[in-house]
View 1: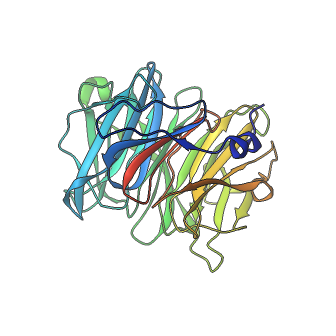
View 2: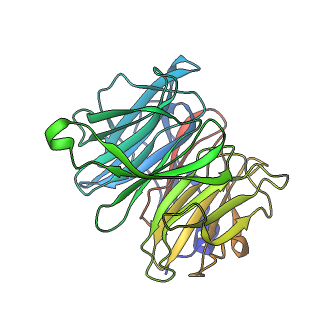
Length: 320
């Protein structure tokens, strides 16, 4: 079983060469790419590729370029997916793989932050759907279970956490998606939520949410979403420090993994140890990295990858 204590021992080794040259990771390495941007980037695996998406540097603060790319070399080299979409500075998109391609969700910077979704296998964005009347105040989150049931989580303009099922069944016929069974939680958040399906084999908590509560301790709330407005198996993480930036969640190897940027600027990683609470608050440790904003993790890779923007605004892809 891979544990974060291994992560701490290895740390993150940055191997960088001159701009434009090949970046070669060590067995545990942080690839500092030439890409710049802001907010929380997203990662997902599908079809033998690592997909990446982030809010880029070009454009206005309200409408930065939405960059989508894929790599067959764990981020060493990537190919951008053509698109003209925009998203707010300091936020970012969400990704969720289905084995062939990825679903993408973002707050559209060209339509008042309307929640928008699309699908891609690398050539272009397809099945693009703008959910009229639904505004995302921060970066959304996506996750799917083993049957392909996919949920989308976002923060509405009032700060409340929302979750709905993303129905893509009409993509082949009408090239549109729909939201179903929307639930608005009484909980509020000051940043984009994280969402994962627990396939760890130990806790089996179903869909799990994490979000920044905005309380005095800067707590991150974590709990199971069961289709109602009340989270179960709830816990809170605020020590050694809390967070005001969007966290990341991942599942696998008998554990759930939570990673976030602390209020001190350091990256923290925790694991649940199979607890039904889950016990993230008991296993929090710094990784030795510093981030400018939130952390993006692929949903089901057991915490082996994470991405963030460093203090110079460059996209970093960390892998064990």
